[in-house]
Length: 391
Ligand code: SF4
Ligand code: SF4
Image 1 (cartoon, rainbow, N blue to C red):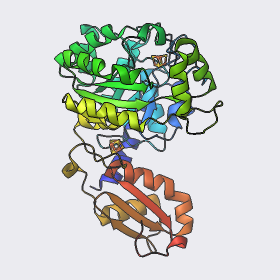
Image 2 (image 1 turned 90 degrees about the vertical axis):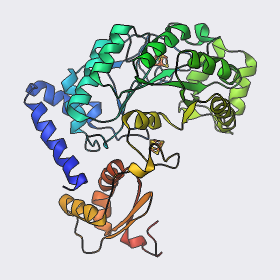
Image 3 (image 1 turned 135 degrees about the vertical axis):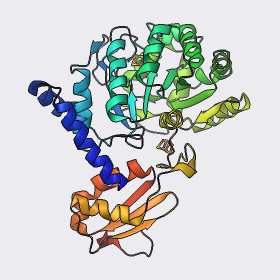
Image 4 (image 1 turned 90 degrees about the horizontal axis):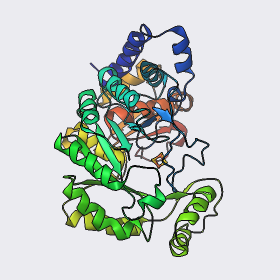
């Protein structure tokens, strides 16, 4: 069967199946929930199992977004979250479906919500089967880790370490890096795909500790790493200024590249530092992932070339796509095929649609093809058809 249509029909079938297990009230809540509406981002769709975080890291962006310093469970039953995800028009279920990322506005393994998070991981694995990652700073004991492995043995766990020496100042209420390394050791001992998530890189601080963090990673049997940049706004800078010295704050300001600082969060320039840290990690034998989704691809055993940072995983295992699959999908969605052009390249797929179809279906079509084919997709309106090639 056509892999695109099969995924869409699976989505309706699973949604119907889950609706039978939920009350009308939960269905109504789930349909209007955030998970039902948000467009997936670069790393996929973020899944919230709680709201707020008591760890109060100085660089954290969630407090600028209005989330509280206390943590609460997400206000839906776990199957309600799955139903909400399936109600999202941009979500595609399955192994080659949308990447899922747990842990962006809370600490998903905080004791208050860990059981709930593990249930969500289990439900995702049982009903949807999508590649799933969790980023955390929590301490996980053996029992928790067994439960996580039972819920999804292919989960990708990212352990955030920004600093070891200054954690007590910058992450005052989070478990210490030593406790995190303890959990990493148990996770790796159980063959759970675990990576260091060295982010945000705080210039003048994280870079000076890179070797030490990597060495402690090796002592905990982890040899995978993802680096990530710092993003700031006036609120985050004010919090950092209370905990870091003037030299480090000036270094951050110098990396804004002339961008004014206000309420909007902006990434500071850190390509040069990242290159250095990556080199150090490679010299120690680490596998480097360009992004968190890349670790997710590795743990699930799929491949992806959706963006310029790829390819990730074994490129020879990218899903096979042919023109008839694409044309059938377009017909299935209601697009008239008369004036459609298709080009399939090694890592890109190009499509030209009539202007009216481009406006109505362009985003949806690109999202479905890009997600499942795991390639970049360019869709253009025939009104711009000046050149011979689509891209
Ligand atoms: S643990 Fe994560 S969510 Fe919680 S305060 Fe720190 S950065 Fe924010
Ligand atoms: S190519 Fe790699 S970095 Fe890019 S979206 Fe895919 S997994 Fe992520």
